[in-house]
Length: 281
Image (tube, rainbow, N blue to C red):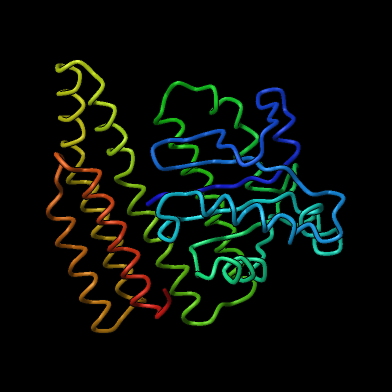
C-alpha cells in the first residue's frame, strides 16, 4: 500500500518554496505516501546510471519496499539524454530503465519511470508545479489528493504509451490490474486518513468523523465490487476467480475498528491477484 514518488528536478529543488539542500529527503509525507525531490546529474556522461544508484538507495529505505508502488518522474533531457527526448511530445515512459532498475534491485518492483519537461505539454509537470501550495497546506486530505492526482497523471501516460506501442497480453493485464488496484485503494485511503485523524480529536468530533465514514461505506464498496467485476473480464481463469472471490468477501467484511490493517490486507490481496493473473511476482 505504501507509495514512493521520486521527482528528479533541479527546478523544483530550487524554487523558493523548497530551497532543498539535502538529497533523498521526503518533502511531503501523508501516512505511507512519500514524495522525494532528487537532484539531477546534468554533467554526467551516463546520468541514468548515476541516478539509478541513488534511486536504489532511496527505495531500499522504504519499509516493506517490495510491496510498494514506486513512481519516478525525471527531467527528461538531463536524465535520459537530449537524443532520447522530444520537447514537442508529452511525458515519455522508459521501460528499459524500469527493467534495469528491476535488475539492480533483484526484484520486479511495481515501478514506472517517466521523463517529463518543465513546460507543457507535460501532464506530470501540470500537477507537480503546484507543489508549493501542497507542501505548506495543513489539510492532510488535500495532500493525499495531490498524490492521487499525480498517480492519475502516471496512469494517463501509461495508457497513452500502451496505445502507441501495444503491449503483450501479460504486460497489458499487469497494467490493467495495476490501474484497478490503485482505483480500489484510492476509494478507501481517504477514509483511512480520516479515521486516523479522528484519534487525535475530541470524542464528539471523532464520533462525527466515524459516522461520516460509515455512511459512505456502501457506495465505496459497491464501486470497488464493480471494478472487480470489470477486472474479471480481462483476467479469466480459475486462479483469478478464486482471488476475486476472496477480494469480494474481504470487501463485505470492512472493519472500521481495525481499518488500517483491513486496508493493508486488501492491498496485499490485490497485489496477489495481479501476480496470480499475470504469472509475475
